[in-house]
Length: 400
Ligand code: FEO
Image (tube, rainbow, N blue to C red; front, side, top):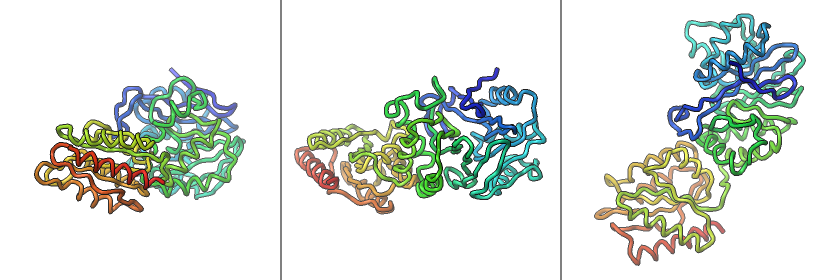
């Protein structure tokens, strides 16, 4: 049964939500499923902008059939070849043999890789960065956005209506609830955290490329943003664009402290809590996440959000406690830079985790060490309390 939503007189949302999926890319936890957007433009020509994930294939097929109303499909714009958008592409192309495919050269290569044995090259209209095309009564400009989030990604700007089709950019995790428009939601309470968690984990490594893409579209008069995931932006568009400027430049949103702790018997966790209290006494916001029980996507998001990161870790196998070590690897892999790191280590006979943490921080761009490493031997004592207070002082000074 079809389920579509009208966005403008000419444009219709024809995507779908998967409320069963637990992990995006089979890695990052999902709290409320995932949605996949596809758009149908009816403007003298029939234009499909991207397809959807296999899980919502049935409703998508019904939606497309409903919108076509027995007509032929004229064009399919393919902005991104990751299978959460393109798994159903070959089926659409095979069912609509007269449809032209608007792609770039890299996209065409990826189509042949994902659908071996099929050759759609004769139907391809291959565009270059900045090319314009008239599709029916609408004029499109194609803006390459490589690595936001794959190399073939391109945005499509409908100059006629001021709609930016932004591929993965400006998306979020979660199925759609209620309106398809973001303006029905409270930005800070309902949208920001998941948009941050989505961006930082999916595209976070490619901040420079994100910034380049933002610069390219900054000159356009954007009235609506249609991403491939989550809600459509048509009001206060600057709010989400400004978030992307912050995240893309690795600028901390908050002068505050993200304490990542890994504790085996609770003594390191106790030290992390004491630090939080000392920071609060100095008027500094902080948050603690336990590396052993927290999804890596939350850890990455907090590393992007805060200016200072404290690693509080037990020693394990003469190095960093393994859940913390994994988190540090992921933080580095996602390109975190420009942060101040502090360390609390614990070890009963040979505390050595701190040295290993500092070695990994050395490899992070524009990151520095703040304060002296706090060393605990088994359990915190009076000296530990003084060391933690000194660390809180150093963090406060670092923020000034
Ligand atoms: Fe939503 Fe990069 O795919």
